[in-house]
Length: 60
Image 1 (spheres, rainbow, N blue to C red):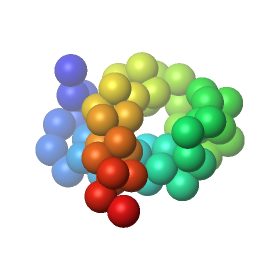
Image 2: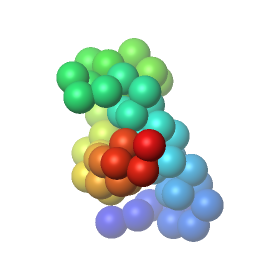
Image 3: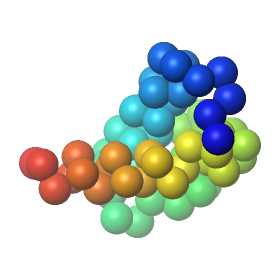
Image 4: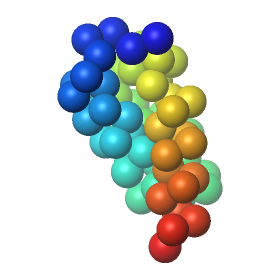
């Protein structure tokens, strides 16, 4: 499910993944709220962002 699709979706996933990676293993919903993400964004993009953040962390 990707509302707006395209570049906006990819940018949101990338930003969320980067926020997750920078926070680290203890990243919570509250951490992401403080970074400016909405509950809806976390519900829609969270799973893909988590996958991307994991790949990013393993690549370091």
